[in-house]
Amino acid sequence: MMDKARRLPLFVGWTAWRSLRVETVAQIALLIPFLVAVPIALLFGFSLSSPDSFFNILIMAICFGVMLLPVFIRWHDIMLIASWNLPVFVFFLPGQPQLWMLMVFVSLVISFVSGGLSQNINPNALRTRTQIMKPVGWSLIALAGVVLTTAFIRGGIGGRAFGSEIYGAKKYLPILFAVVGFFALSRINIADDQRRKVILLFFGGYLLLTISNLAYMAGPSFYWLYYIFPFVYALPQVESDINASGFARFSGIAFAMTGVFCYMLARYGIKNIMRIKHLPRLLVFLIAIGLATFGGYRSLLVLFAFIFIFQFYLEGLFSTHLFPLFAVIGALLLGVGILFVNKMPYSVQRTFSFLPITVDPVVREDARASTEWRFGMWSVLWDEIPKYLVVGKGYRIDPAELALFDWARATHRGHFDDYEEVIAVGNYHSGPFSVLLSFGIMGVTAVLWFWGAGLRMLRSNMTRGNPELRLINITLFSCFAARVVFFLFIYGELSTDLPIFCGLLGISAILNKP
Image (tube, rainbow, N blue to C red; front, side, top):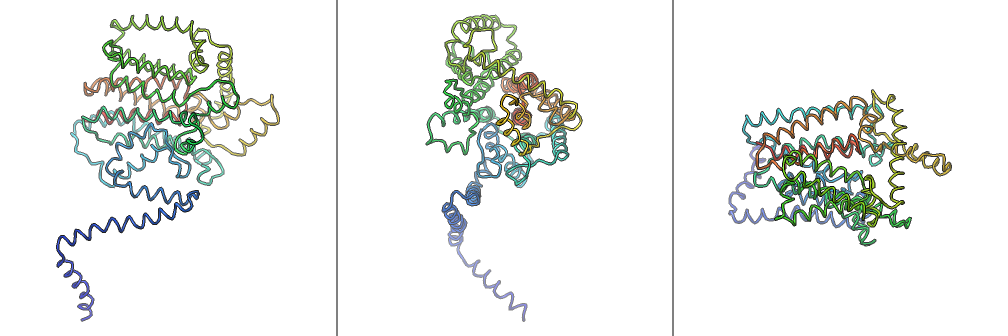
């Protein structure tokens, strides 16, 4: 009798539910979104009452995340590709990570939960592709192992945002997320008619770098944008205003042109850019290069030259009439530069100051001092190599040590080398030093393995891939190879360059899927 009494409410409820009409059930189902939305709206409104509180900002972020969950589920792959080169910070999270790092995590979680890793792919083609990508994957795993081992030996990853007494997470996390990000990108499947759009989304993210300079020029009313976009690219503008030197350098605009430069090479190729019947393409290409010179970075112009030379060779243009044409145009531009560069803005003059041309003495002295500063720092670092050859220094930063440098600089002016503080934070302005001193000989081995495997993968996609994607594959190979040379001989930092390398390889894997 007791069992029947317990079952009676369930029986009555089930009978009542079965007696409802379909229309009634549909009406009840319509109430479910309101039952979810109302608590979220109340929680969001409560958080807005104290918008300066970090906890309330986090609550608002969670509310936005819940509301955007259907968007993430549907478009997380595209959002990961588009965010890879976006200079956007997630300001409401501890440490203010970059957006692409958050999207790596979100995309992988959604993929595993939804079973997105089990795609229908030709087994033979998948086996061939896996054989090409496997060395890249293993090299990245080895590099991550070296980084984590070094961090463990040197006192941990740290991070002020996590309450640690040491710093270093700002450099460790981009490396680790870049490794994971390569695997996140390589599992994405894109329809054939969407592959060219992928390149636009990937390189188009660079354009938002211009916001750093434009927001500063627009005035204090737009400074709130620096919660989202990096302020560091506007620092040369601030310094020029404070010192009243008139030596304004537009770093964000300059680096943003990297995206335009690479996208045009991937979309059209050098041969189709230079055709007279496509004059607007040539004008846009030249304007992008011209705007890049307003950053005052000699290295950026050198990087463009490396990419262009690799692309020119791989397109097979050295044996065509374009080679002597470019030689003549280059000689003419050099002649014009000798006559008129010293009349241009200081930032443009500084970009060309490494060439044998006449520039303003102020610019020449600034460039010379920068070069001497680097060589002076490297001479000190050279003596540090034996100390960190086996176990690297890592990225551990002691705040007390930085405070000591600030005190020494303030009290011993003229007896303190300003690059000593730069050495303390691990910003060596040199790719080889950034790997060797930070992670020792094992780190160097892992990076060389990664570069070799990456170039082999890109070359295979370029020579054996879809002929319709040949120009894109050539550009990806050119960008990767040029950045390797640039990293070795001009400028490099593993924590900032590894995401670039992994992004190029990940996009190549997406486009060349069977």
